Image 1 (cartoon, one colour):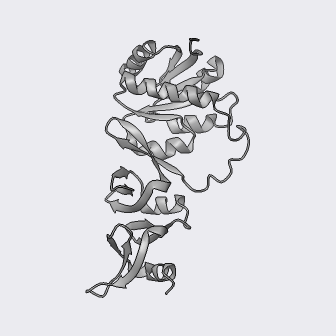
Image 2 (tube, rainbow, N blue to C red; image 1 turned 90 degrees about the horizontal axis):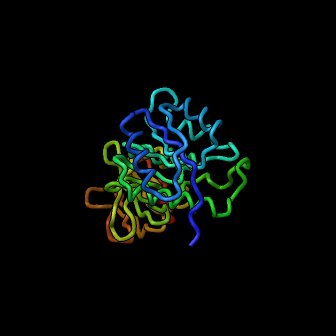
Image 3 (cartoon, one colour; image 1 turned 120 degrees about the vertical axis):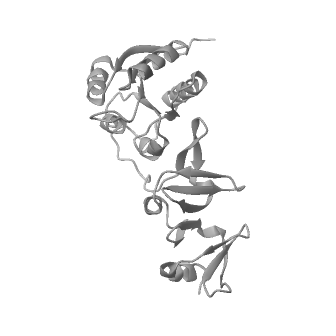
Length: 251
């Protein structure tokens, strides 16, 4: 069996202990060759220019230029290193995948999880690109998936699987088919902007649902409008959203 092609890897993190840990982890994964380390975003950009790494293991929260800004600077670079974010904070996941990160690993990084990320990088390198690096990205106007923290990793939640979205303080709960749910650190206004209005509709200041999950619209005993969903649950329609709800059911 042929050996895996070597991934020239640059570690970027402002915490010396985190850098040391990543150095150790890299030695445990076949085909990962550490070519350098950087402690801030500006140094990372200089080292990327000089070393041309294949893989960037990149922290997000750093003084000066943060990890998201570094990845954004690299989007039109050819060749562009694959970016795997390694961070203690789950709330940056949406921004991370907006800059085409291959993976998003939560600290403390464990060897098995980093190995999965490296495998994804290898798979991405052999997959045919959808568009050229300098081409304008089409039809990515509407979000197609979310990456959300779950236990010690980030999991992919396809938008096609989401039935409803409910606000819970600073988070939004994404309820998917089968009743499972995940929390994402976003406002409902931001999610409304990202989701296709032909598929999702906002019925209340704190609730959005899939249009095709709406079964009926009716008054409850208190005189409020409610929509009944396909799973038998109901959502109260906010006063400012009543016209939208009536239009959906043809009233």
